[in-house]
Length: 382
Ligand SMILES: O=C(O)CCC(=O)C(=O)O
Ligand SMILES: [Fe+2]
Image 1 (spheres, rainbow, N blue to C red):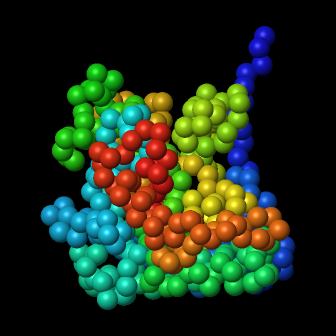
Image 2 (image 1 turned 60 degrees about the horizontal axis):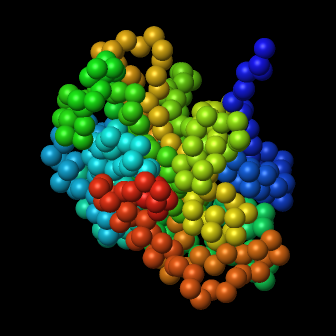
């Protein structure tokens, strides 16, 4: 009898940033490198002040307040491609290759930044929530800097500069916080599927086989901090599954989303096993950091699928999902000059700046109909 092929099990290493973990920074950097050089994802426990489970519940509550506003109010602060800030409505973004899609992502989101503090209000419909959002953004940024110090320690950097990555990130220059809501919708019957397209009204949407909550993509910046719904006050899990990571392997049934013709598997990203009151995040590498690190850190492709419990009948409702994502992005004027394993930069001339890279990716990733199959630029998300 042929041996059934088993999908890979995903091992995502964990680091604990709590000072009481007893680990030196050198040890943390070693685990971080092991994770980010292979799977490209890392669990981080105790990410720091302002990011405890209580704080994370707080920012999810802010998201709930914003998402329940009437659509007209949300659309009044529509997403601005220039600044990367504002509201993106259902199917307003098609992440991933369009050839494999029949409509956009089934999600709505608020992006807050990259921006200056003075322009922040314009990207939120309820200004009273701004101080909370700003405090959370700042805590994410501080955690991002701490992680970038470990990135620096993990690699050889030019002139052994311990601030090599940190010094090229300035607050309010180019970071972004995104609150995401993947609404609950009833499941479509098989014959309903093709009649549904981009023009379907929100209230009539049903989730079909071809739907996806966020198409396959690489993140854009240097490091992404992902908060999945934390347990509620009683410790009950509230996160809804759906995040999947692409693992290239010859026996895989799926085509690699990067159009290299490789095969692989989409593997569900496991939730952290050791969630503490100090909080926990999933960290991954973006395309800018993959370039900048000369490929030593990997920007892994990932996506968010609609969970499909086999016993869910047409008409029954798939639960909604919420997430909060913070993108650490190099300053606009930073040249993404690759360094090699000896810490030597390649010639800077001709290297794109972070700002140029951002413009290129945003223009393609958000112009719904400009997203083309085989164009990896279209699939880099910020
Ligand atoms: O919602 C999630 O779990 C992941 C979202 C994501 O990958 C992104 O926004 O870049
Ligand atoms: Fe992502």
